[in-house]
Length: 232
Image (cartoon, rainbow, N blue to C red; front, side, top):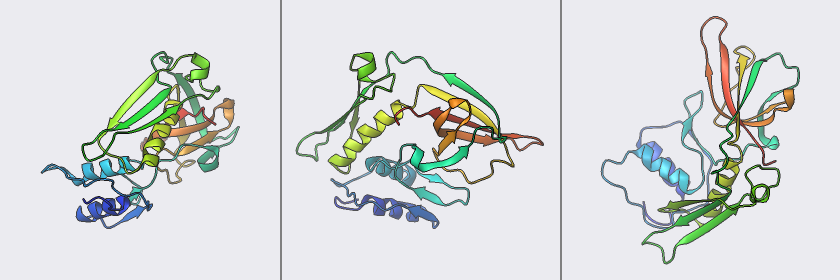
């Protein structure tokens, strides 16, 4: 794939070549900085996933109608809540909070480096968790715990900075997870990937859904697993 190709156009070409005809692609203006070549036998899925990563898009996924979705990763926030469970809502049957308290080695400084012979110089971006509301932050812990990631390619310096910022945001959601159950009939609205959820009961608040499953037996429930959001 030659340098200068619009990345989302290249992704769409790969999906079409794989025989897919139903897709929703959020267009990007980002272009490839260098020529991209792939080893013989590389799957189109792997090519698509690598291109998505270069522009900070979500992994390729398919909705409930079998449509391929190509869209940017967006942090969970109160402004894009997809599913709201008010206090006293009968649809939430049970909710259990589980904590991961292994935060000692968790990073709070995220450094991205792109090193390639096709570039005149290495590219670097850094994002620091300095949010005092976060238990992992430099402010709260008083130390910098770096996490380095080295990439082969990226579409731009702005995309590299966004990747560092996104890794920081995702790290701030990893301390607490919650599992809750809903009735199937009360929760049949379409669900996407990593939807933002608001649960008013018990002060739970804003969550990002990680996965969900439906028990199709008589009286079965929908099981949801989500992680707490702390950066708002």
